[in-house]
Structure formats: C-alpha cells, structure tokens
Amino acid sequence: MLPDEQPGSEQIEVLRAMSGQERLRVVERLYWSARKMKSAGVRAQHPDWPETQVEAEVRLIFSNARS
View: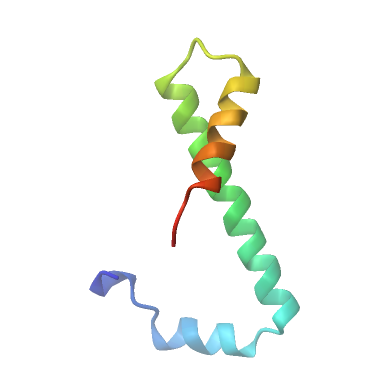
C-alpha cells in the first residue's frame, strides 16, 4: 500500500464506529462501483463489442482477480 493510501485516524475512527452491517453495505457499494468502472473501461477498449460480451469479460476479470 502506498503511503497516501493509508487510512487516516479519522477514517479508522469512522469505520470502527460503524456496525458490521454498515461496513458490509460500504463494501458492497465499492464492489459494484468497481464493476461499473471496469465495464466502462472494457467498453472504451472494445466499442464494437455487444453488451453481453462486455459483461462476460468483466465477470471473467473479477473471477480471476486477486487481492
């Protein structure tokens, strides 16, 4: 992790104050935002692809992703 990606003390405090359910909702929103951004990137790289092919490529990318 890069130094500017480290969570600040305020961020840590906010996350600790959240319930588990709230944190899961945040993670879910981040996940779907990442998929939307990836879809936009794939569409930009392959403007001739039909939406079904874009969706299939995004599924493949996310299924092979490693954290």
